[in-house]
Image (cartoon, rainbow, N blue to C red; front, side):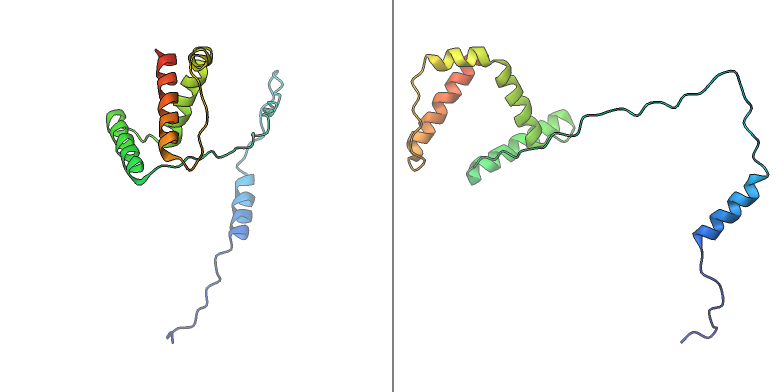
Length: 138
Protein backbone atom coordinates (compact mmCIF):
# COMPACT_ATOMS: atom_id res chain seq x y z
CA UNK A 1 0.00 0.00 0.00
CA UNK A 2 1.40 3.43 -0.94
CA UNK A 3 2.38 5.76 1.90
CA UNK A 4 1.04 8.92 0.29
CA UNK A 5 -2.33 9.17 -1.32
CA UNK A 6 -2.38 10.06 -5.04
CA UNK A 7 -3.58 13.68 -5.29
CA UNK A 8 -2.48 14.79 -8.77
CA UNK A 9 -4.99 15.03 -11.57
CA UNK A 10 -4.25 12.68 -14.46
CA UNK A 11 -3.00 14.24 -17.67
CA UNK A 12 -5.85 15.48 -19.85
CA UNK A 13 -4.69 15.99 -23.47
CA UNK A 14 -7.83 17.87 -24.49
CA UNK A 15 -7.54 20.56 -21.81
CA UNK A 16 -3.80 20.86 -22.53
CA UNK A 17 -4.59 21.50 -26.21
CA UNK A 18 -7.26 24.05 -25.27
CA UNK A 19 -4.85 25.95 -23.02
CA UNK A 20 -2.16 25.93 -25.72
CA UNK A 21 -4.62 27.16 -28.39
CA UNK A 22 -6.00 29.90 -26.11
CA UNK A 23 -2.55 31.25 -25.21
CA UNK A 24 -1.24 30.98 -28.77
CA UNK A 25 -4.25 32.82 -30.23
CA UNK A 26 -2.98 36.22 -29.09
CA UNK A 27 0.41 35.62 -30.70
CA UNK A 28 -1.00 34.65 -34.10
CA UNK A 29 -1.07 37.30 -36.75
CA UNK A 30 -3.75 37.62 -39.35
CA UNK A 31 -2.51 36.56 -42.80
CA UNK A 32 -1.54 39.46 -45.04
CA UNK A 33 -3.69 39.64 -48.15
CA UNK A 34 -1.78 39.56 -51.41
CA UNK A 35 -3.08 39.93 -54.92
CA UNK A 36 -2.76 36.19 -55.49
CA UNK A 37 -5.80 34.04 -54.92
CA UNK A 38 -4.86 30.66 -53.57
CA UNK A 39 -6.76 27.75 -55.01
CA UNK A 40 -6.87 24.48 -53.16
CA UNK A 41 -5.35 21.68 -55.22
CA UNK A 42 -7.79 19.15 -56.58
CA UNK A 43 -7.52 15.79 -54.95
CA UNK A 44 -6.00 13.20 -57.24
CA UNK A 45 -8.58 10.86 -58.61
CA UNK A 46 -6.96 7.49 -58.46
CA UNK A 47 -8.78 4.45 -59.74
CA UNK A 48 -9.83 2.02 -57.04
CA UNK A 49 -7.21 -0.66 -56.45
CA UNK A 50 -7.67 -3.76 -58.53
CA UNK A 51 -8.37 -6.97 -56.68
CA UNK A 52 -5.60 -9.54 -56.50
CA UNK A 53 -5.49 -13.27 -57.16
CA UNK A 54 -2.93 -15.64 -55.67
CA UNK A 55 -1.34 -18.24 -57.93
CA UNK A 56 0.43 -21.23 -56.41
CA UNK A 57 2.59 -24.11 -57.53
CA UNK A 58 3.90 -27.24 -55.87
CA UNK A 59 7.59 -27.98 -55.24
CA UNK A 60 9.35 -30.98 -53.79
CA UNK A 61 11.42 -30.39 -50.68
CA UNK A 62 14.66 -30.60 -52.68
CA UNK A 63 13.32 -28.13 -55.28
CA UNK A 64 12.32 -25.79 -52.45
CA UNK A 65 15.83 -26.02 -50.98
CA UNK A 66 17.36 -25.30 -54.41
CA UNK A 67 15.00 -22.37 -54.92
CA UNK A 68 15.83 -20.89 -51.51
CA UNK A 69 19.57 -21.25 -52.22
CA UNK A 70 19.07 -19.59 -55.62
CA UNK A 71 17.18 -16.67 -54.03
CA UNK A 72 19.90 -16.32 -51.40
CA UNK A 73 22.59 -16.14 -54.11
CA UNK A 74 20.54 -13.50 -55.95
CA UNK A 75 20.14 -11.49 -52.76
CA UNK A 76 23.87 -11.66 -52.06
CA UNK A 77 24.71 -10.58 -55.61
CA UNK A 78 22.15 -7.76 -55.58
CA UNK A 79 22.83 -6.80 -51.95
CA UNK A 80 19.06 -6.46 -51.54
CA UNK A 81 16.11 -8.62 -50.56
CA UNK A 82 14.69 -10.44 -53.59
CA UNK A 83 11.31 -12.07 -52.93
CA UNK A 84 10.27 -15.08 -54.98
CA UNK A 85 7.09 -13.33 -56.15
CA UNK A 86 9.14 -10.51 -57.66
CA UNK A 87 11.33 -12.94 -59.61
CA UNK A 88 8.32 -14.92 -60.82
CA UNK A 89 6.52 -11.74 -61.93
CA UNK A 90 9.63 -10.46 -63.74
CA UNK A 91 10.18 -13.81 -65.49
CA UNK A 92 6.51 -13.98 -66.43
CA UNK A 93 6.74 -10.49 -67.90
CA UNK A 94 9.73 -11.54 -70.03
CA UNK A 95 7.96 -14.70 -71.22
CA UNK A 96 4.75 -12.81 -72.03
CA UNK A 97 6.82 -10.24 -73.94
CA UNK A 98 8.03 -13.04 -76.20
CA UNK A 99 4.54 -14.39 -76.86
CA UNK A 100 4.85 -14.46 -80.65
CA UNK A 101 8.14 -16.39 -80.51
CA UNK A 102 6.74 -18.66 -77.81
CA UNK A 103 3.63 -19.50 -79.86
CA UNK A 104 5.79 -20.17 -82.92
CA UNK A 105 8.07 -22.50 -80.95
CA UNK A 106 5.08 -24.22 -79.33
CA UNK A 107 3.49 -24.72 -82.77
CA UNK A 108 6.48 -26.84 -83.80
CA UNK A 109 5.89 -29.25 -80.89
CA UNK A 110 3.17 -31.79 -80.20
CA UNK A 111 1.76 -31.32 -76.71
CA UNK A 112 -0.48 -33.57 -74.67
CA UNK A 113 -1.07 -32.93 -70.97
CA UNK A 114 -0.45 -36.21 -69.13
CA UNK A 115 -2.36 -37.54 -66.18
CA UNK A 116 -1.52 -35.85 -62.90
CA UNK A 117 -0.74 -39.29 -61.47
CA UNK A 118 2.00 -40.00 -64.04
CA UNK A 119 5.02 -38.22 -62.54
CA UNK A 120 7.41 -39.34 -65.27
CA UNK A 121 5.15 -38.04 -68.05
CA UNK A 122 4.60 -34.76 -66.15
CA UNK A 123 8.38 -34.33 -65.88
CA UNK A 124 8.75 -34.93 -69.62
CA UNK A 125 5.92 -32.47 -70.33
CA UNK A 126 7.66 -29.84 -68.18
CA UNK A 127 10.96 -30.47 -70.00
CA UNK A 128 9.16 -30.06 -73.32
CA UNK A 129 7.89 -26.63 -72.21
CA UNK A 130 11.34 -25.70 -70.86
CA UNK A 131 12.76 -26.42 -74.31
CA UNK A 132 10.04 -24.36 -76.02
CA UNK A 133 10.59 -21.40 -73.68
CA UNK A 134 14.37 -21.52 -74.08
CA UNK A 135 14.13 -21.62 -77.87
CA UNK A 136 11.61 -18.77 -77.87
CA UNK A 137 13.81 -16.53 -75.72
CA UNK A 138 17.00 -16.97 -77.79
